[in-house]
Image (cartoon, rainbow, N blue to C red; front, side):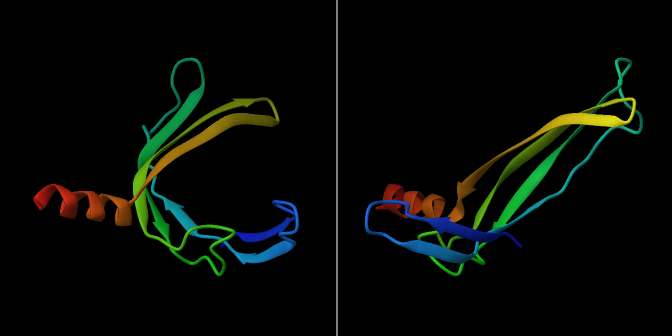
Length: 100
């Protein structure tokens, strides 16, 4: 659950604090790393609208894809995590507009 504290986003806006939207990723990966030692995973991601303030995050459901790449080099681990989340509310509105 992300806890967010922002200060002075725009002149005169003041500070904002609260919870952001919860994001849950589910990962599927091969049993073993690749020959070069690269570990990768991919799967779906879901955004749960838990935001307490719309200045911090929009209060909306979302879904998409996520992936992670990791490389272990001795005691260190290096990597990247990426995801793309589409607003489910926006997709429902688009569907309604195309049916009119």
